[in-house]
Length: 137
Image (cartoon, rainbow, N blue to C red; front, top):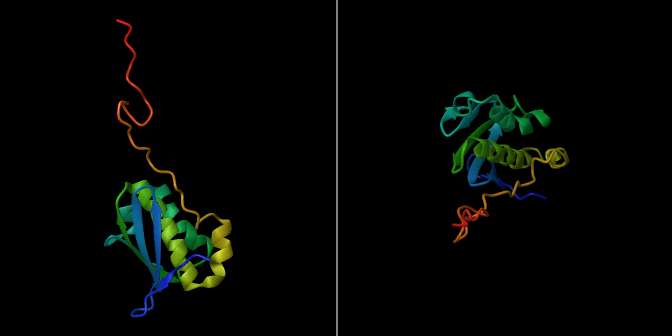
């Protein structure tokens, strides 16, 4: 089972999500469905609809969209990576909030870390794999 933390002071359920170089620290607590990311509303922080949907997917699959408030702190990466990190972090925090969601979230692929990262540049090459252009003369 995925390890989640329960914050003893405020009763928040914590989850951490990662994607590429983005990290999202998520707090889920009982509430009215408010989602705050880095101090901004969901629609303001992620203006693209596909990014908003990625954040909301785990909440909608478990039918907790209007039952919990979500506070997210995102760092690193770009907006798409942060949205995917939020998705994973929310899923992990929802397990701590309601443990019966584990099978639903696991089967939906919300708990699987997408480990694809940018490959590093190697010396003697122009990029990760591209070599220098051959010149006959």
